[in-house]
Amino acid sequence: MAKKSSIEKNNRRRQLTARDKKKREALKSLIMDRTTAADVRIQAVMKLAQLPRNGAENRIRNRCEVTGRPRAYYRKLKMSRIALRELGNLGLVPGLVKSSW
Image (cartoon, helix red, strand yellow):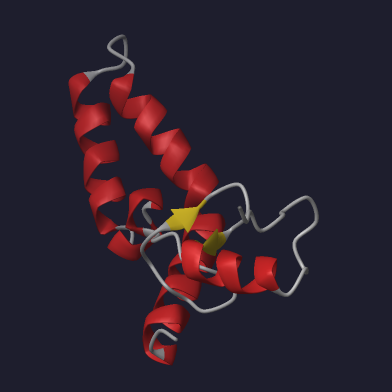
């Protein structure tokens, strides 16, 4: 089980990202548009830099929803390999069958 603080920090990052997503996209599109004036683009860069860093989408860490484990994460199932195996052995994951021979 991951530390509660790590899980909560990641949840706060998700909330910040969702809150500032449209603002970041607008500023980034303004910065990337070469037809706008240079001073306007520079002002957009400064506004983007003033936004909280944890609001950036690449700051979010994929974590298992069952245990909070950050590594060996399956995106499709939103859980780690260890949690997947435990739930699979209990028969709680539909379509997953333990192989034996």
